[in-house]
Length: 116
Image (cartoon, rainbow, N blue to C red; front, side, top):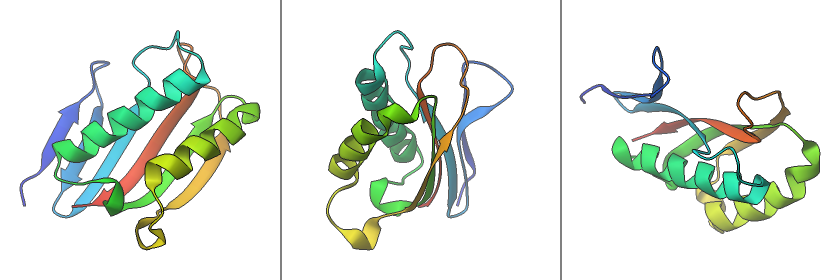
């Protein structure tokens, strides 16, 4: 399979990289002025776009690390996540939620490993 990279606008890094069957991606909101629910929706949509760009999908996720600036948002995250990931436990990835400081007003960021 061909290597694919989707460079970040920030320079010096890629949003998604695929080599052979492996996929590595990062996603966050494009509008840091949104509230948590808005940023989360944009992050999930960006993740879908990144996965599609390299021929992967939610069902091919293996591992997801979710970085939150405030754990008070975790119930909102959990509800949106369950709706987004679906009911088929055969496709659920491993998931970890980590407290972090994020730059530029971001409230959530996701780093994933998948296959294609």
